[in-house]
Length: 305
Image (cartoon, rainbow, N blue to C red):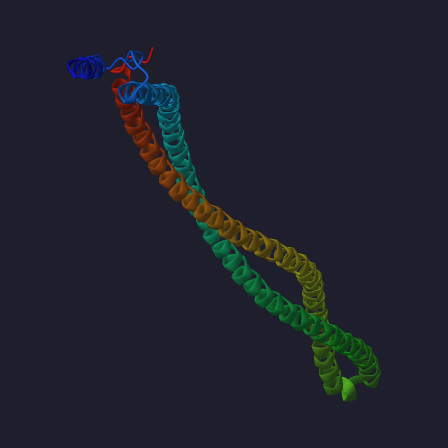
C-alpha cells in the first residue's frame, strides 16, 4: 500500500512539475504496467496531442501575424491612395464646374449675339424695303422728268415757230407802211415774248436734264445699295444660322459637361466610401495583428520541445 502511495505521489509530482514549468515536451515516467501506469501513459498521450495542437497554433499565429501586418499595411496604403484619388476627383469636379460655368456664359453671350444679329438683320430688311421704295419713286421722278423734257421741247418748238411768225409779221407790217405800224408793234411784242419763252424753255430743259441725270445716278445708287443689302441680308442669315449651330453646340457641350460632372461627383462619393472602408480595414488589421501577437505570446509561454 505504501508502495502504491509512493508511485501515485511521484505521478502527481510529475504532473505538478509539468504544470509549473509549462514544459509540454516533458513526459511522466511509466514505471509499471497497471492502472497507474495506464494513467501515466494516457496523460503522456494527452501532452503529445496538446503539444501538437499548440505547435500548429503557434505556426498559424505567426501566419496570422504576417497576414494581419500585410492587411494593415495594404489597408493604410489603399486608404492613402483613395484619399489621393478623392482629392484628384474633387479637383476635377471643381474644374468641370468652372468649365461648365464658362460654357454657360459663352452660350448666353452667343445667344445674345444671335438675337442682336437677328434684330439687325430684320432692321436691314426693313431699310432694304425703304430703299426699294426710294428707287421706285426716283424711277417715277425720272419718268416725269422725261415727260417734262418732252413738253419743254414742244414748247421750244412752238416758241421757235412763233418767233418766225412774228418776224414775218414784222416784215409785212413794214411793207404796209403807216397802216401796219400798230401791227408791227404787236408783232415785236409777240417776237420778244417768243424769245423769252424760248430762253425759259431752254433753261427749264437744262434744269430738267440735270435733274434727270441726278435721278438716273440716284436710281443706279439705289439699285447698287439694294444689291448690297441683298448680299448683306444673305450673309447675316448665314451668320445667324451658324450662330444657331454654335448655340446648340454650346448647349450640348454644357449638358455633356454637367453629366460628366455628376458622374465625377458620384465617383467622388464612392471613392470617399472606399477610403472609409480602407481605413476601417486597416484598423481591423491592426487589431487582428495585436490579437494574433497576444495569442503567440500565450503559446510561447509553453515549452513545446
